[in-house]
Length: 299
Image (cartoon, rainbow, N blue to C red; front, side, top):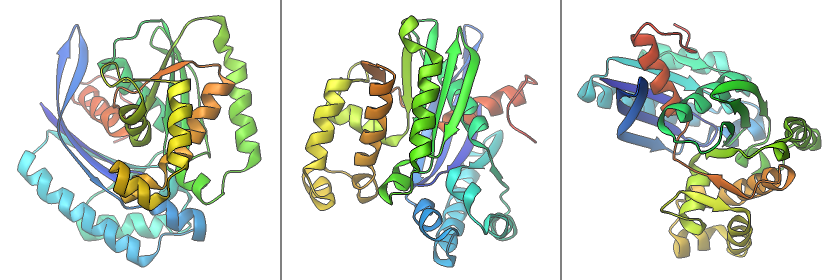
């Protein structure tokens, strides 16, 4: 069965088309295609407070392109979500109405807690975990979502206004760092072994560049060395010498800073980057809804 999802984040928009089947009574998704567009809504929102007409036009054209692809793959069900940047845009209602009126798509705004649940649920299906305790971390352009699971049961989750684009423009409040540090201390990670599972394009790229590609793992020492190397290059050099996309080259250093702080505060020595994300989680939730199972998604 084919399903499709769209994730409109603070840095990029993603259309994921995937098949879903069951293995050991759990849904497993397999990617058919992923189309990423560097919308960079966060640059508008975190600097100006709203989404400019020019970036709205880009968003509309993106949905028009997605429409053509959906007509080719013809998924059973489809769902589109938007996160931090669009949540905070002062003209979000205008933008959502324009998308609906001009393209026919309904774009659902989801809160940070709901975002964290969807992301971590995607990992519960496609990932083999060594320990019963799991910490899920998703670092995006506008926010960071962290969830704590025990035996696949959600114990605690929280969203923080700490993101790569937000940090790039020095828009992360000190109180948010303190809140993140305090939340990690409350979990008491040191009391048991746990899986540290991370998602997002930046951690995937950091792991590919500096970590263990075969295991998709990244140690604290590898991250530290990689951060120092990246910080020594200009954005242009990261593009020319390291082959990074321009919209990745500027935010990958803030991403490294965020992950370093989390690993240091949580005394985390190694993390996993299994290439999961919000779009993957939405696919799994669509499958559940199709099968008549409880789903996080609203109608």
